[in-house]
Length: 574
Image 1 (cartoon, rainbow, N blue to C red):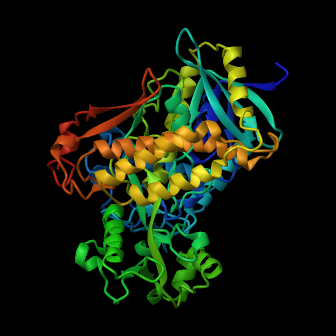
Image 2 (image 1 turned 180 degrees about the vertical axis):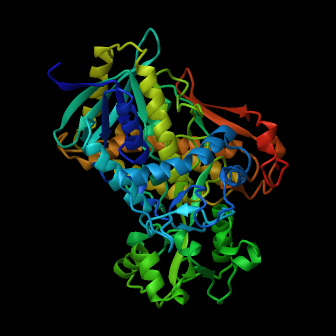
Image 3 (image 1 turned 180 degrees about the horizontal axis):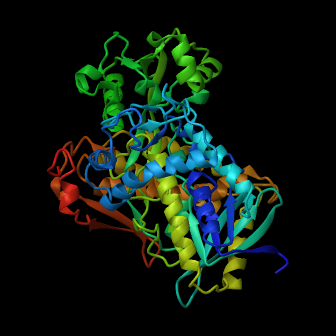
């Protein structure tokens, strides 16, 4: 027992981004004792990379906007395989979450009349994104963090959770094991409920806007505990990431640039979106714009660094410095480009996973008792493609709902203790990676990331996907050979040993699901199956089988009420 410390609470939340912090505030207000753990530090969450705004039909700029239009845009953008109830909840509740943020102290950009300023974004019928320049996610984190540190929420940062425990009799969650990187000490977190809010797994790809934390940890922890995953093939490629210099390749260039009037051109000076999407142009859905850029580059009309041009300079210096100060600084500091005078070089970058943990739309509950999830790591809302700005609305709306549901659950649940034998096994597993002359885990990580970017990119086919699966299986065979020297304290190599185990689970789920879905829908494009098929109006579910292998099944879509079907344009599912 001296080998680890024990932390007890009602609810353990893994992840200190927008979803995790909003859930913690709600659970605390509902009378629950909450502990937040994060492998990073409080205030450093991937939420800050959502720059353009929060999608909410407050109607301050376009009074015609309402929840019904937002609902329709969300379902259509998800190409009809999203959870209709989650889309309805989001559309109805997002405005209240924006006003709540204001109450907490968030400062939004304003119209001349003093209302919340909203900008256009791809796929949205109206100007809907409430924003703070191009730093909206940062403002959300700042605001929620301020609430957290002034309330009775225990926060433990630089903790890496390595194992979840379930009660052997009930099968319900009862605890988790984590390693404090700062102390080199293990902690047993005893709780009645768990909320997974770890964000996505974009770092399994080489070119991504995701920060270092996004290695699919929550997905893998949940999967190993028996939680079902859904729609894992659906990976969103944001159309515009930096392509040069190489050190910042993939770094996000906010959709706000296009929302404020930015124009995409190829090396011939052609505004090529007029060819691919003559009506919506640069503000079409993200998958459409990303594929268009991909096709231009493939046709030899890309830049020397493998991108296209994005130009906002025609809007003038004053406008750019007011609306896009972050983008100005980003290009000036990293690329030596003055976007008030010069074009940006951009290209598609892995940005977001629509798939993830399968949750109940009302509560965020999973198929394992006591385990809940919200945010990017959860699935259902976005279907086959996500509307820009819906991610920030998602973390606020469903973070709050899941915090309330988890709190209601623990009021009736009994606390049980993890099996001491399993706790010891968990610590032994982690410590076993400390050994000399072992294989470098970072070599496996780089091989995986290169394979995923090359074989599981914007346009996929069976041959490439099967080759990717072969590589993943080969890397899994190498896992017993990896290890690092040093100690348990601040050992980045040890962290890589943990991460590659999780990354391979996330990658396998993505690839196997992509092989199974024999059609093109939303963000999932198959060159060998180039059309949508009504036979694939269903979700793909991944779960761990009794023999430890990954099992895939399909799940019919829940029936949408007729009154909601009438809101959708086009009105017939495709």
